[in-house]
Length: 306
Image (cartoon, rainbow, N blue to C red):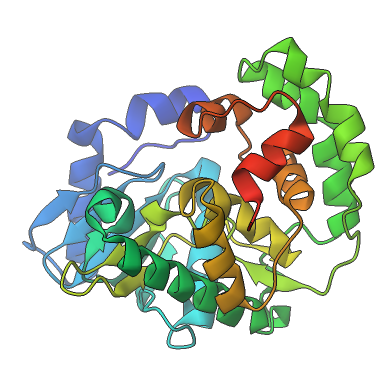
């Protein structure tokens, strides 16, 4: 029911088109014993994701991202019931057709934290930040060895070398002005990053949009979207935390770090920001405007804890 999607052009033509996607989702639901269940496509995220009734979520992965479907299923199964915050339970997963894969999972309750954040009172924001710190500590404490065959990058030092070599070109492609671009090589060279850290399971994007909350007391009710998970340096996970949870608030990052049990140097976190797989510094500068005009000053503005 779903056509092959192996190129960017096919992705752009097929994935956003509900006239193509919905019949495929309905057909797959029928094969999974959920025929006739109401389908609602979530508007966020790069992959097509559907609520299937009140109790299930169906996430689809085109052939171009089929390995992400394998990662999602394996990591969800590995972490389920082992973190302070609920994660989806895998109900079924596998190949569909024409290279597509799927994961059928339980539906978590709650409201997207990013959408609710402006309504969360200050004292509750501190508690939420602490809970996120506890959750990351628990995630990073899990043994990642059972996932090593499915998750990259494998050699962390080689990953850093690849990302560093492409850092300037990556940010130039995003439109970063030259005054920032020219600082990147020397800044990265000045920050010592571990080439063989104690391996930790990384979510890689523990941002507010991937947490759920309940306005009745503002507990965290879910953490989802593990498809980009990796094994590597725990500090890498604090990029998304600092940019999209604490958002340059040193008190909030200090609370989160205290609950996590460790704090990382601001320059370390900005270096990982530049080396992150999805790094887009112009976007971050729009999200978190600052008067900083050097990378060390920017590191302090975004990632300081005092």
